[in-house]
Amino acid sequence: MRDMVEEALSRIRPTLRKDGGDVVLIDVTEKGVVKVQLTGACRACRMANATTDGIEKFLKSEVPGVTAVESV
Image 1 (tube, rainbow, N blue to C red):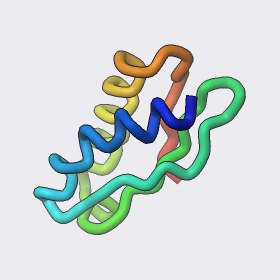
Image 2: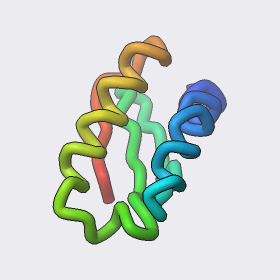
Image 3: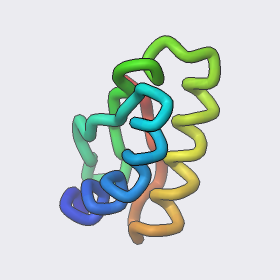
Image 4: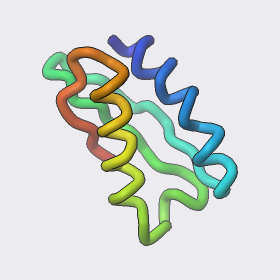
């Protein structure tokens, strides 16, 4: 599943990078929880929670078995 998550994240990275941010995949648990770290402008952005929620929605629709996304 990790490879599928990484591939899906690579498709949304250009959008994050346009705004000076990025996302790093930290872990994918056996229960389907994806742990990510927002970097650059995304890290301190007041919309970071919304970004994480958007990433979660996207990953759930693209990768079977993803149950949640947590920003660490």
